[in-house]
Amino acid sequence: NKLPTRIDYDWKKTEGWTVPIGKSFSENVLHDFDKIPHMTIAGMTRQGKTVLLKLLFAHLINNNPDDVEFYIIDLKGGLEFNRYRYLKQVKVIADDVKSAEKTLKQVLHDVKHDMTYFKENYYTNILDTDIKKRKFIIVDEGAELDPPAHLSKDEKRPYRYCQHVLSEIARIAGALGYRLIFA
Image 1 (cartoon, one colour):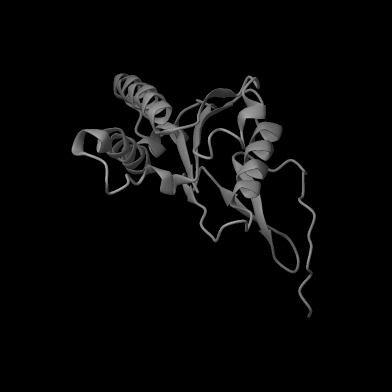
Image 2 (cartoon, rainbow, N blue to C red):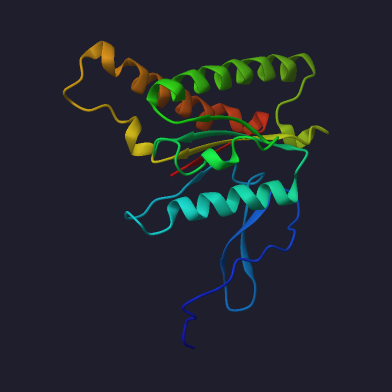
């Protein structure tokens, strides 16, 4: 069969923390953030990575308006996500490495706080609790977190810190309800 050249996004509500990310011949292909907590989006310039991020963002809000939080690191100078800054689900929008560092310090603090809460309650995974909230960290233009070679060691510190925290989130925070979407 000939593949379609355009498929409209399906705004129908999906179950839990699933989002449509594609279509087979017969049905939507869903990504379930409770089964695979993190997502990487890659591709060439001007091929739709940010458009996909915005669709995921909007779908998650549409599905779970009271239980989703976003920490957005928009390294295109804040141009792509700035218009959403006043939504109740958006906690912060960082638009450069310095504000990304500040945002990720807060996220790491929250991760450690949540880890203490989980330990005190003998939880090992958010899926085994009645906690509904999920916290999404969206990074658009993540390549900007690679420090330019000409910077001094001290100037590279915020870049390395951001990389470190994103690694922590990817490795340990998924069980606590944190979801990383890195483009």
